[in-house]
Length: 375
Image (cartoon, rainbow, N blue to C red; front, side, top):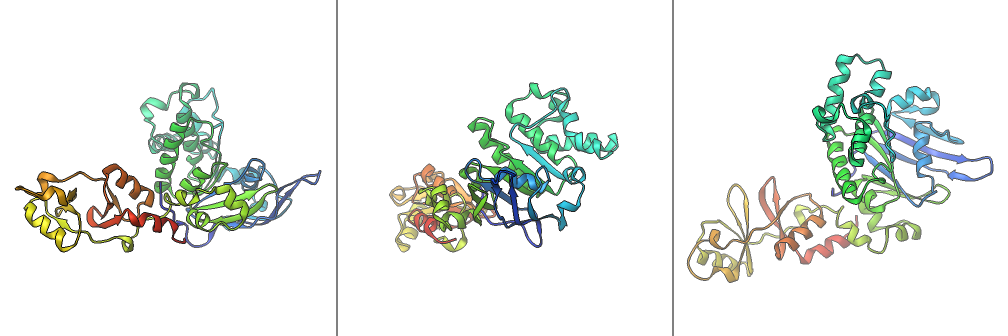
């Protein structure tokens, strides 16, 4: 899971301002709504069923026209753009995937490039590139049909198809909701890996707050009638819910959820004793005594080897003879990762590295204060 910091900078790629969708019977699908999505950012719309998440997203590519207000994509008012042209510039991924059943995987992915008149010499390399990007071997999967794929594979093909013409904006409507939990977890991880490479501006709809926290750079919490309750980073949302509705929606366990989005910073680390693998045990014990510590980190110039306990320094030998392996994390990893490393190694803290080199220790006692800290 990624510690969250918005990646977008500069002018917004998508802007929605005072947009309402009111049906003839007076039902309001989306109340006055104002939010911006910066270039390269993942904005997640989350809320209970019927709160207007999908309607909001569909207004961006004009599958639904707003009753009032303005929506812009890359500075252009979408109401002034031909809907077909607009949709070819915006990738769209839905829960049911929507692959054409009688076309091969390659043909499905090539749909928009063909509509745009791309030459075959350009289309085929692009299809193969995208299949590799989403983790599918072109030699194996390009000629298969949708019914020959698993649910997770079909979803990957759907993402590849949405990316085929390299659109700046990607709309994703509950894309992983129809797969089993294991496949869903893998698809989420794959999506984050993919986003690190392609850097699209993404509007992602889900009803799952944990998915929103894992994937979003910013999260828009909506309630019935399309009211926007809060739009914030996951860390800010969990630390300071703006309304009672948001607090109830994210749950009483929001402090625990924050562990996945709060990063480990260098300022939180303590400099516990560090010894070389070839240091004599007596010298290691002396280092711990000087620091009034019961543990030391065993490391050399290239890597961290693990922990050495004070109890293990009796007798002859060197630190390498008694070292206990440890899982290390990098500066910027989540507090949750630090907790997992501590539990895996039954250690008093998480060893933190910076570019692979020992940087310090996040002590177990500091985990709670880090989780409670304000965003």
